[in-house]
Image 1 (cartoon, protein in one colour):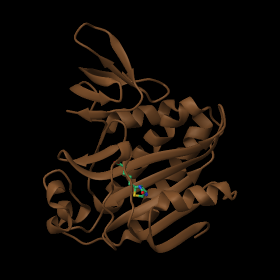
Image 2 (cartoon, rainbow, N blue to C red; image 1 turned 90 degrees about the vertical axis):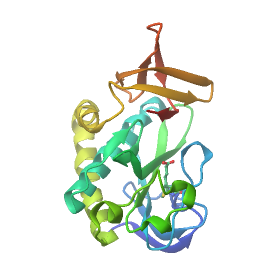
Image 3 (tube, rainbow, N blue to C red; image 1 turned 60 degrees about the horizontal axis):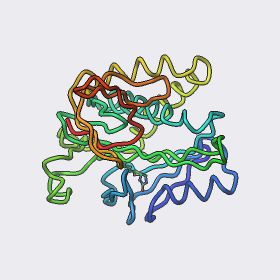
Image 4 (tube, rainbow, N blue to C red; image 1 turned 30 degrees about the vertical axis):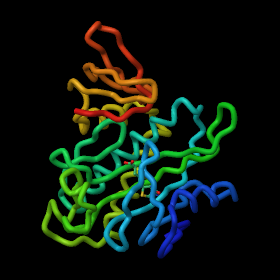
Length: 243
Ligand code: BTN
């Protein structure tokens, strides 16, 4: 393939992609690793990335958009990953806002978007995708065993990770072209169709505190709208959602 960097052991594919982006790497550059020693998740969490068991990769995109629209791309990637996994393995994942992929409430995939930008324009988005593929239950740390799952656990079959990556990249390309031609609206409709957060009462733990309310929808920028019990609508940019 073009612009694919395969690595054996890395700290984080995000760091490698960040460096490549600074050096002027082209849009579509992909970094894939067999193992991450310092894999990271959202909200300063660690991301377990055991060797050969999953897909640990980071994609560089260079959309010409203002910073406030970057959540759109994270939602786009979540949709493409759902579609790619579904097409190749038959596993149907749901999306929990903003971008966790769950199967029966257990986490299959996490997505982490980082960016390089100046005051209002995005230079590069570094979109990290972590997919649990061939883990058996005992491959997960004990504290994750009740909350995580893998494609293996859902299908009782081991999967060739390269085929899944190809399937996902095909869907990313297709949706990204659609986005560039038609904007976010068609992506938003797809995202809503896979979402399990909308219409639910959820608790959003944000850096500024905790809000309980009804998840009403997402804005055209990909921001979650949460209506609290007084009827006040809150715009949630970043939070942990408990359902
Ligand atoms: C989350 O759910 O908190 C996001 C997890 C993102 C994990 C992926 S694995 C590839 C890339 N490199 C990292 O260090 N993190 C992301």
